[in-house]
Image (cartoon, rainbow, N blue to C red; front, side, top):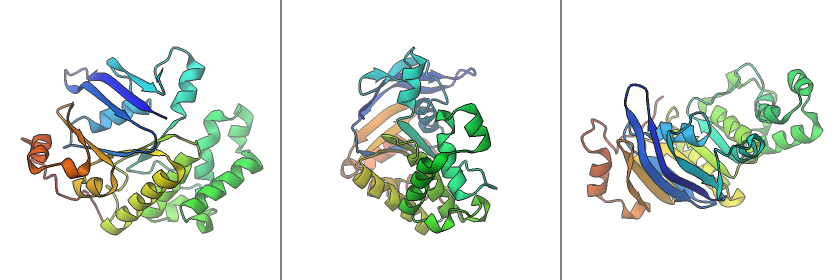
Length: 257
């Protein structure tokens, strides 16, 4: 699915311009990282893309169809094409890994089955297959609260894939993980990109990992795109322009124990 972002703008009530005239295109199967300092507008962009926030101006197209289409059914179907992985996992900790993956089906289920958790055999088998895809099938009946951070992120990836997305938004997916685990998660996402041909759009503070795993980088500064190109075309001067006049070191690794 081809994603087109055309002249997106967003201004908050306090007058802050989070995004201004942002335009780019992502082809199906690309791995693209959006880089920039804190407050550059990366998170706002992702919230607009996954429907959590509306833009003030501009248009988002999926295969030429507006994401903000007036037709509610069409909009809902388009939004299903975009899955999201969050830095803090956003899982139901007391529930099992299997139930967390199955929860992705709730928006498409009738009221009574969703309340009673009657997901059916087909959905359950698919959820198990996806847990196996992320190397966690043996943890299917384990409560999420008992898992490590890396394992929780794998459950979150399986849950996102349960929606059969064409585009996967990864919002700082390894920022809360140690370096080794973070690299394992990105290796998994890279494999999903290659084997399932899912588009990966990642928001990241970690420039080193972004350059290693991405086909393309989009640099944002003060709500505007200042770079769009391949990792090998990212020079020191361009890095300085992306992170200019910020206290943030672009080479630092945003990881926590």
